[in-house]
Length: 140
Image (tube, rainbow, N blue to C red; front, top):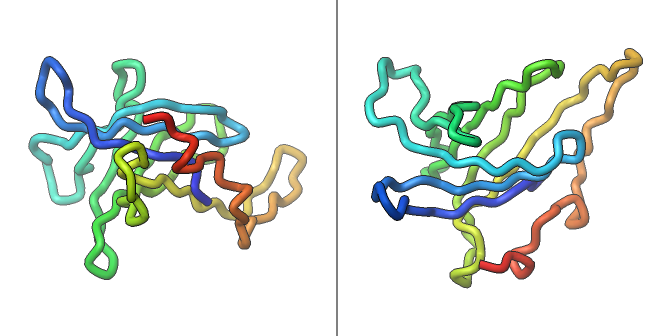
């Protein structure tokens, strides 16, 4: 399910490249954050990217590749919740205008137990209505 979008940006004062992202999840709400490349990894298993929100590091990302296409696996620990926020960032291969996002953010969720002990079903057939974003609705 598509939950957000991201844009390539460069810091005006720093010249540092980053990804400016916005996601919207019904339970959590909207979350704006930036993704920065890690300058030097400590080990091969260390994250390639760090996720920053309100000047605080809140998550990490690892660069992956499938069928020759790069993508990013991201994790934001969700304190006080049963599971962390796992999502993937993909290049937007349908971008045709400058205002369209450079990246799509997708969330794959699985069956989980709710607070009553019942199961929350996985939506295996998302529809276009599940997508809170439209390329034409983005003002920049």
